[in-house]
Amino acid sequence: MSYRYCIGRHTIAAAAHADTIAKVLTANPDILSKEMQEFMVKDIRCEINNVLNFKSCIQFDGFHQGKDWFTPLMIFSNSQEDPKSKKYFIDCRTGEIECTDISVESWEAFNSDYEDLIPWVKLSNMFDTKCWKRVFVEYNGKKENYECYPWPAKINGKYEVVYSKIGEMTGWNINPDFIVKIE
Image: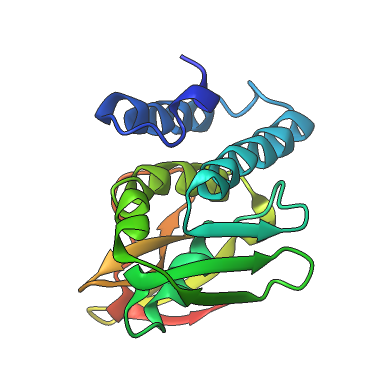
């Protein structure tokens, strides 16, 4: 099954495909060259952005290919009093996000689909070495650090950036309460 077809589809099978790709590539790191891995990251993000751009409440201004706009968009929506009644404009040249009021029905169409994109955002971030962070944690008197990738998760009704260890796709493996610093 093509991952381009799966991105943005509202099925469990389509979302599970991202996890399958991650498991295969993590277990067999030599399958893709560094160039092909970079292409895959950009291609996945391009498809995510195409899905976002297709929705009536998201509009891109400029060339959006290869950049993760989903995470900043979801974090920005937290700052809005009523995020479901907004149309979001993303300026790809400056990284600025603005919004105007719209009817709630437009957002509801998007709201039913956006969670289907999260596994694909995770997959692209997992293989994009440029977005990796070193996360230092401390728990039960132990100090550890991991190479991690960020992704957006909805926690208590708001989006937050959480971190997973490289190679992990299910859940977030780093408890935010234990993070001491991120580099």
